Image (cartoon, rainbow, N blue to C red; front, side, top):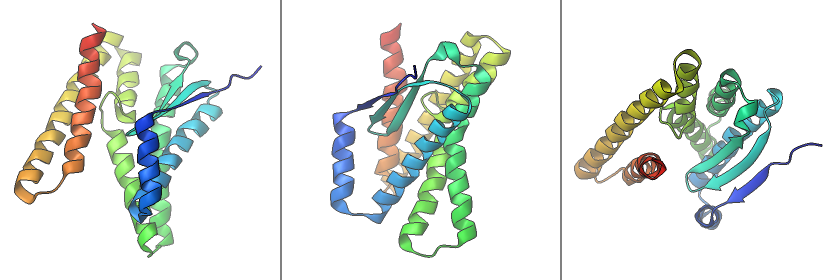
Length: 196
C-alpha cells in the first residue's frame, strides 16, 4: 500500500494566495511559479530517492515537506534539500539561454535566482541549513551540527536584519527584507526556547 502525503494549508497562506490572484501582478505570479517549481524539485527528488513524503504544509513564506526521518539517510536528505534550489537555478539558466525579454519572463528569471540564493543560505529552517546540518552530522555529532547551524543561522539572520534596518533608514526601502529576517528569527529562535 502506498503512503499518501497529507497537505496542510495555513489560513494566512490562503489570504496571501488570494491577494496575489486579485492583484494580478506579474511579480506575484512570477514568484508563485518559481516557488511552485522549487517545491516540485523537492518532490521529484523525493520520488527519485524513494523518500516517502508524509506531509506538505503551505505557510506564509513557502512550503515545508516532512519526511519519515527513520527512512532517510543524510546523503538522501542533502539531495532532497538541494533539489529545490537547484531547480530554481536551472530555471534561471534556461531563462538566460532563452533570452526572454517580456516583463513576466524577466521577473520569473529574477524570482528564480533570488529564491535559490535565499534557500541556499545556511539557516536552519532553509534548504541550505539542512544541507550544512546533514553534511556535519554525517561526519561529526548531531549536537555539533546543530550548534554550528544555530550559530550560522543567528549570524546570517542578524546580518540580514541589520542590512534591512540600514536600508530602511538610509533609502526608505527594504521592508520585505526586514519582515523576512524578523520572521526567520522568530521561527527559529523563539521556537527553540519553547522546546527546551
